[in-house]
Image (tube, rainbow, N blue to C red; front, side, top):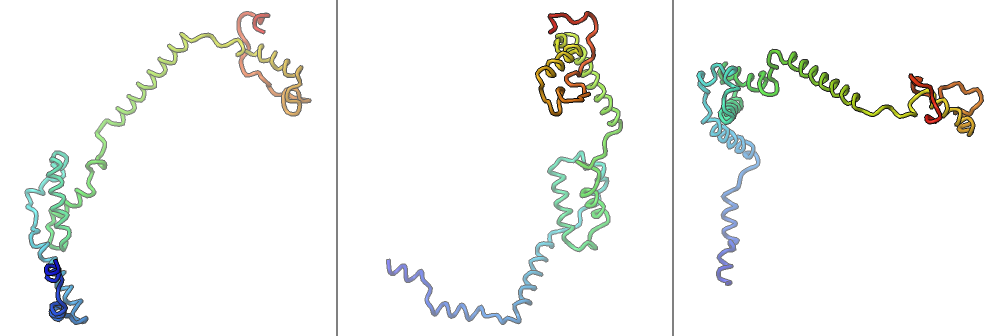
Length: 197
């Protein structure tokens, strides 16, 4: 076990050799990193070439009908082209990139012709159905309760006055001229009887 451990650990002599090989002067460090970054950039953009004009021709008309995978591939290719110098891009590529990014498609699509009229007529249909349902429900509803007439509510005012309810601001207060409990129209038809009380 000790033998294998000693092999795994590097000796101090080998560390000294490696450190002497990797010595870079501080003045050379920025130039070396710029050179490496430039080479990486060249490698990255070396495979990027102009997209053919037939691929981009009439993209405005074809975009909606294209399969999503083809749309994504085209957009990625244009995105990679836009990472290079824009002076190297063709006019077709610039137009296609602008149209795909800001054109009237997807959520920015213009409404189809006649959509406003269609919304209006469907809204009117909904209001009409609601009105018909309201009338039908009112026809089959029970009559209003007997307390919903002006005579009963006037008698309620008299009862509240006799009980001296709310003597400061209510019906029982001095000089009160408000409606009190009266909120309904006078009852039409037969006069009130003992049963209504």
